[in-house]
Every structure is written in C-alpha cells, then in structure tokens.
Amino acid sequence: MRRTFVVGRRVLGQLRRNPRFLVLTIVGPLVIVYFLKLFFDTFPEGFDTGRYAVPAAAFIVHFLAFLLCAIALVQERTAGTMERMFINGFRRAEVIGGYVLGFLGLATLQAAVALGEVLWLFELDYDADVLATLFAVVWLLAIASVMLGIFVSTFARKEGQVFPFVPLIILPSVFLSGFLVDVGELPDWAGWLGHAFPVLYANNVIQEMIEPGGTLADVWVNFAVLAGYGLVLLLLASRTLPEVEK
Amino acid sequence: MDAIEVEGLEKRYGKKVQALGGVDLSVGRGEVFGLVGPNGAGKTTLIKALVGALRPSGGRARVLGLDPLKDRPELRRRIGYMPQSPVLYDDLPALENVEFFGAAHGVRGLRERAREALRFVELEERANDPVHTLSGGMKNRVSLACALVHRPEMLFLDEPTAGVDPRLRSRFWAAFRELARGGATLFITTHLMDEAILCDRVAVLRQGRVVVCDEPREILQRGRTRLLVREDEREEERIIGGRAEDLAEALHAYGLRESVSAVSVEADSLEQVVLSIIGEEA
Image: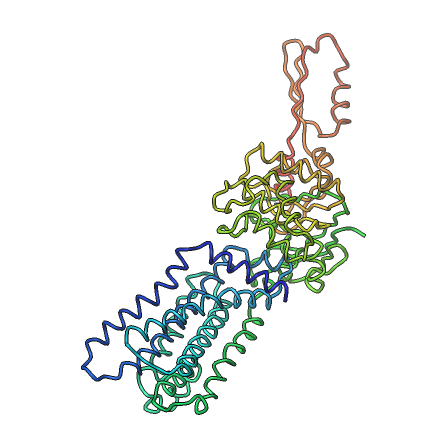
C-alpha cells in the first residue's frame, strides 16, 4: 500500500509540474460544454435541454479521463519508466493503484467543472440532494473511465495504438447508452451491447434524477454497477499489465 | 556461491529470431564484470533476463542465489539496474527521481540517501533542477544515482557510458571502482573496448553466445604482435603471438647483435583481438 501512495504522489507531482496538460484537461471540458450550449441554442424554445446537457457533461468527462489516463500509462511504457518501476520492485497493482490515486483528483476536478458549467450555462436548477447525486455519478463515471484507460493501455505498446480504441469505446457509448436515443428502441443485441459501456449506467441515473420526483432508490442498481464497473476493470488491468516481457 | 550463474540461457522470439543462444557464464562476488559485443549481440536481452524483466525461453540463471523470475521481489531489493538510456521522469527534479526509485525499496532516511547518491555522482548542486534541463551526461549520472540509492549488493549497468564524453566516462569508472571496493558486484555491458579493459573479467557475446570469457589481459594474449626489425638497412616484419614469451622467443633469433639497429613492436588492441575472435566464430 505504501508503494501505491508513492506512485500516486509521483503521478500528482508530474501533473502539478505540467501546467499545459492541467490547463488543457480543465479548459477542454469547459470549451466543449460551451460549444454544446451554442448547439442547443439553435433548438426550438421549450426543448428539454437538461435531458441531454447533463449526460453530455458526463460523457465529456468520460472521454477525456479515459484518453488522458490511457496515454499517460502508455507513455510510461514507451519511455521505459514502467519497466524500470517493475525492476525496482513496484508491483502491477501498486502501479495501477497509484495511477488511480493520481488521476482521482483530476477526474474529480473535471467532473466538478463540467457539471458546474452545464448547470450554470443551461440554467438548470436542481435540489441539493439531486445535485449531490449528479456529481457522484459523474465522478464515478470519471473513475470508471480512468480504469478503462488503464485497462486499454495494457494492450497498447505505443501511444498510437491507443487511438483505435477511441472510436471502439467512445462511439458505441454515444449511440448505445441511451444518451441520444432510448435503449428500448434499439435492436435487442445493440441494447445488450450498450450494457458493456459505463455511460449507459451513468445516463440511467442522470435521467432518473433530473426527472421531477426522481429518486436514487429506483436506479441504485445502475449506481452500484457503475461503481463495480471500475473495480472489475481495476482487477482486470492488474492481471493484464505485463510485468515481465514474454 | 557466485553472484551470477548462467547455464544454457536461451531467448527466442518466434521461430526465427534467437536473441540468446545458450549463454553460459559466472560472475564472482565483488567482481567488475564486462559484457562486450556488437549491437544486436544480445547484451541487453541477457541483462534483462538477469534482472527478471524478461522471461527466457530456456536455460537457467541464478543471481545472488535467486531465480530472477520466481524470486523477483527479493532479488529486486538486492539489485540496482541502470537502463541503456537515462530512463527518468523529465518533468520531475533529479532529487525526486532518485527518491521515487529509492522509495520502491523502502529506503530509510530517503531524502538524505537520495542526496548522498546525487553527491556520489557529483550532481548535488543540480538536485532540484528538472531532469529535462540537464545535459545527456548529467541525466546518465541521475540514472546511476537512481540505481544505487538503495545501496544494492549487485549493480546491472546497461551501456552506462554510451554517449558520454571521455572525461565523464573516466569519472564513471572511478565511481564503479569505488562501488566495487565497497563490496558491490558490477555487471556492465559496453561496446567500448577501452572500457572493457578496465573490468576484472570480460565476456564477449556474439549472436547470443559467449565466445570468450576471461581477464582482459588474457584475452589480449590471444592477439597478434607485429614485430618490425631493422638489420643492416634491411627491414623484416614478423607476426608473432600476443604473449610476452612469444616476443622473447622471436627476439632470441636475433640475439642482440650490433647490426640490429631498431626493433618496434605493435601489439593488437583489445578491440582488434575481440574483432578477430568474433571473426573466427562467424
């Protein structure tokens, strides 16, 4: 556990010393959410923008957290620091756990910034308990995205090899997670496939919570699956990350 | 027990590429052991197999009496490894890099030990500078500090002086000798023969096999000496063996006649001997 904190502290130290990266990760969601606002402003008055805007914020955080974490870990491999860490005695679980800790703060910040801007720009007004649940679900999605990034990075040897995973993971999330169309209207197989992506569970919780009278009790399974999703990926990644060259 | 014992170590990538073709060697404790060979000879593959970063296809290796793969956690506490290029976190200061790798070993009084390691490589004054602001040679020195911060019993250094200027190289070798005097065993790969000659013993690796393993002085004796004798305005050139006895024997034929006005001797360098050994094996 001590070494997990050592890796986490080092990842944080690197993030802190890379202001350009930090600014991009925070300014990125802000700009995208603003573009989203411009897009929805073209819709007829009375259109329920909240139904799309809040999940969109979650989706933006999901995309950025996944991509940034995957690339950072692959860079460790290409630079040789991953191998040096292992030779120095760090274990797989410690490296992965350290990355989760390091990116946790960043994911939290991204979740808060994206959600805050959506609520402000779209003038959405929710009760404090709804807001807390919305933040929790976006945060959990961000954590699951970090795990997904770590998991995907274990299959890539170069940064370039991460990019084919982007359309494979991100685009199905857009179309099959109920974000744009109701999952019930999709063919059965596509509906089932949508369940493989964490955005579906986050969207289910968000849609329920922003409905008048919506309660977490009705969607708690989605909430739990989202939390479990990250955990399962963490376990998978800690088995697939190669510690010894074959 | 030797620090390193290797028997028939093999590494194949697929059916066609054989990086190690049955390596046999042993390294004594406290020895400065050099592994030389041309690019692609298998030096880095061998070093990675010995530090447990690579799974060999066959054969057996023991480092400090431990299996590099099965006893990984214990072995990694006792060894230090410096990769070929300075593998460091460029954004972080030199001191934080050394502390990070030291923290993996649970080093006590880490800050002081990291400073001590940087002092050893004469970089203490740049301890707080980000690595990306350092020169290539300085990065190599930080990398060496990372490898020895936990005071390992055995150091694996993969071409530690590649791209380093001669003055700094001699500083590195002074540091290696100091570590060896302190009881550490050093396993160093290089393709520079003027460095190999500084080792206690040298193994020459060619196409994944050890073609010779001996003290540099003994390897030099496998070379040839070009003997040029000028007698009565007549010059005679003879190629003799590299041993001192070969020279004495050749000179016996001349006695020390007044007519012999000059004798010059040109012995093969270690590089020439190694190249001829590699050539013989090809």
